[in-house]
Length: 77
Image (cartoon, rainbow, N blue to C red; front, side, top):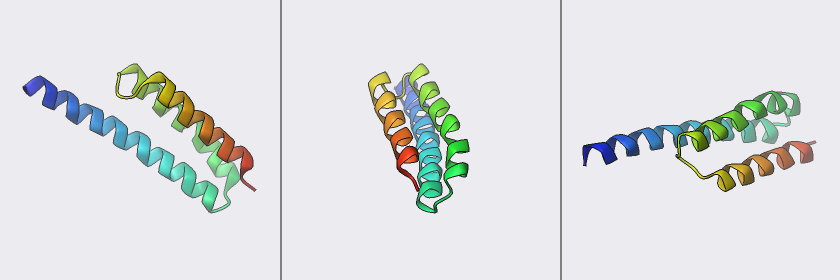
C-alpha cells in the first residue's frame, strides 16, 4: 500500500507540472504573445517527454497533446 501511495504522489506531481506548463503556454497564445509562446513550447514538449519516460502518461497521449500545442502556436496570430 505504501508503494502505491508514493507512486500516486509522484504521478500527480508530474501531471501537475505538465498541466501548469501547458496552461502558461496557452495563456501566452491567448494574450497574443506568439514569440513568448514559441519559447515556452520546447519546455512543454520536454515536460511531456519526461512524463512519458517515468510512466506517468502514455506515449500516444503525449504525442497528441504536443501536436495540438504546435498546431495552436502555428494558428496563433
